[in-house]
Image 1: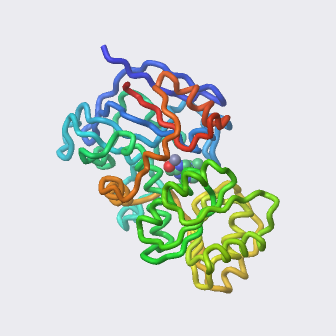
Image 2: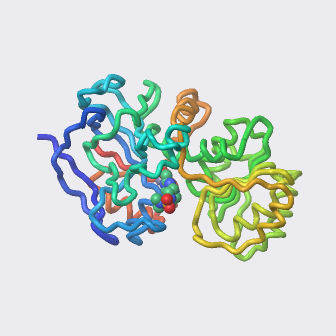
Image 3: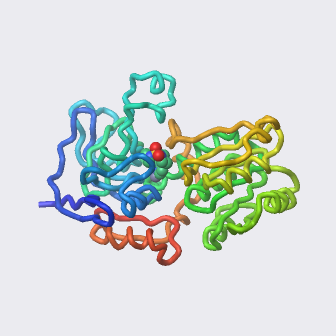
Length: 350
Ligand code: 572
Ligand code: ZN
């Protein structure tokens, strides 16, 4: 009998790997034998704090949402996939009938059921059912690791689209964590001629260089916005046309507003602080467009083709690998930043 080892978060720092029954797919679902699940910052936040923003883990919740798998069984009405197909899982299933879904901005759907966002279970388990419409068949030249990495990569794609990154763009990315790094690779793949990424850690910045960043800049909390702004303009030889803020702190937002070119765009992807006090008017008075990002919509196909064609190499983001039995160790490694992790990958069926 196959097992269905499942990683369930019962409370703060109470993550358990337990065997569960293998579920049956509903008519429009597929049952997946899970491949890889990457650990996201939000998963770690739920593990350490029991909440992420206003979303609180009240009941035991299966963790994980950056995932890939192999179709094991299809529901009675599924015609697009067959057993054996390897897929990337888009973790948010929207209602398909509200105005946002109809407009194609389904990431804004109020009925969205998103993996590992309470009360919705995630998919860090050996067998898991998901809507077939949100599974993307992987080409033969893509691995299950790369399939799982499409999830953070889709955030990078969405952020660059929101910023209008195109051939010749000069882009500043603030924040050298996984989202800053995927945004960097996507910006280069979309034709940005100059990308500067800022970050606090050497490891992230070194990787950014390998991934194609033109410039990196190490920042520390004590440095003032104007000094940083001058350094960035000096390095780029101009103000950035587009700033993509993957930090979401008062410091990174203030920097984005001060440094971005007149008439440019400031995209905010990271939301580390709930409230910030920063001078908004001077930026708006220079016709800087301020744009938010909420996950992604319709971005998996482009993310996939970037990887499949070799335009981006996301595998370099993986710093650690664990089996599902070692999930607690993997989460502690992420939380305690043991061995300078960037992306930690859990293999569900090794
Ligand atoms: O992979 C998608 C993703 N989105 C994140 C965070 C981590 N991973 N977002 C930031 C937090 N929001 S939220 O609405 N929330 C906790 C559900 O505040 C979702 C988007
Ligand atoms: Zn995530």
